[in-house]
Structure formats: C-alpha cells, structure tokens
Image (cartoon, rainbow, N blue to C red):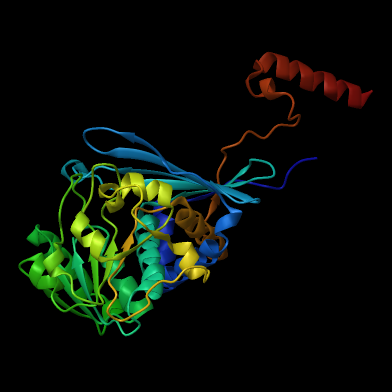
Length: 363
C-alpha cells in the first residue's frame, strides 16, 4: 500500500515571508509556547548531546532528538569569521521525520529560525528565573542575535528599557537602527553605553551573546547586583565561554541538558560536582527557580535539540497553514518498493517491459 506521506520544503525566503506575514512577536510567542510544552514532556524524548566537528575556524554540529512519533535534527555551524566571506556566522537547516516510517516530513531553513527560537528560549527561562517585575535589560553583544533577543524580552516579558554594548560600535549602531525603525519596538527605550560595566549597572536582566570562539570574561563579580538574572547564551562550545567562575559561584545556575552544558557552556569552568538545575524541572514544578528578589540567577544556555524540535513543529503547522511549503522530490517514488533498481534500469529494458505489458492488455 502506498504511503500518503510526502516531504515538504520550507525555503529561507518563505520562512522569512512567514515571519513577516504573522509578525515576529507572534512567531516568538508561538515558538516559546511550543518550547514550554515540550520541556514539560522532557522525559518523553530520547536525548543526546550534539555531535560536533571542531576546527580552528569554527564548529559544525548535528543536533538530534525524538519522541515516540517525530524525529528531528538540526545541522548548524558556528564560524565567527564568516562575515569576512559574506556569510552568516551561524547557518542551519532542520528535518522533521515520521518515527513510524522514517519518512522525512519537512526540510526547513533554520538560520533565521534559530535566532527566533534562541530568543524564545531565553524568555521561557526568564519567566521562571527573573524577578517578576523586571523591566530593564543589558544586551552585551549586538550581533545577529541581538534584535531577536531585544524584541522577545520586550513583547513576551515586558522589558521596556535596554542598555546596549558591543566592542564593535558598528554592531551597536546596526541594532539601534533596526530597532528605532521597527514598529515592533514601539515603547522600547534603547541606549548605547561605552562599556559593559556602564551598561549593566542597575538593570534587572543581563543577556550576554558574543561570538568570539575564546574563553572570555564579559562580566566580573563586582558588576553583579542582588536580584539580577543573567541570560548567558554566547558560550556554546568547548573553549568558548563568557561568564567567569566567580560569577557562576554567586548565582543559582540553570541549564538545558546538563551533560551537554558541562561540555559546551560557561559551566565548563566548574568542577563536576558544581550544582545546577535543569530548566525543565523548574517549569514542571519539580525544583525551585527564583526564591527571593535578592537571589542571583543564571541561565547557562547553549541551545538544545528540543528547542529546534519545538521550532520545527511551529514552522510545519504555520507555514502549511499559510501555503508556504512546497513538495520536495527527495525520496524516490517506486511502483514496487522492493525494486530500487527500477530507478536506473536501462531505458531499452523499460521500453520492452512496457511494450510487453501493453501487448498483454491488448490480448
């Protein structure tokens, strides 16, 4: 019996069109809702740390995950020098497949979507870990992720003031220009600062998102004030960190998938017995998150495959509803699924077989 399943393709152009049609705030909200739902199903997933191939210039990774119905993976790179070659620092695509048959259901761009899902994940964590009355944030690192982080916290958490700092003043100028011209940023006050220390002074939340593949110290202990929430999303591979050990020791630290974060996150600084809590446990009410207004919390986020699973689910439903996917001739269509050779059978043999079949019918 022939299967009705067919691979659909969502291009980079149509993914961007989808976000424009429904609006970035709605896309952020939809993906954040899926992430929250899927974190609550944490134990239903077969989970692994991502497979990474490191080089002197960057990293290429595969991020797989599956529940009992759907398998997904993301291909993603991180190459900080790519902008010198006219390429994004991060490029990605992803796949959803049917567990029962192995049939790929969706192949989609994930470069744009990774930025959206990362910002959505940041907000899911901050809802559980930041002070409920948080209204200000410092955004340290103003590159490709920064607009998405700013707009996610503005729309989904009520942040109305953002302090900006980047060692690259052109990056900050780009971010300010994009936000000032954007109706989605209405009501959001933004200002640039000359140093990290000045930018973080007095804010409720600090988001660090730098791209250099080094062990850096973006924050120091004397910059951290009681009650702050640190959203550390720039440290995401071995040897690449942003937050030094003395800051981690001041905070209650929360992670996505602990085995992966200990290898790739700012947590790689710390001994194996340094206590952390997986975020899903807080969302599910199994562990405490923030317990006081003076508590310092940190989300040491490296990105985990379940978030891409959530984003791909959103893309599949939303892009299909908007008519933005198209069939992709990826898997061979076989009259006899046991006869793969028929795809390359010499044309003369095929013509003879067709002629014999026609003669048999005529007789």
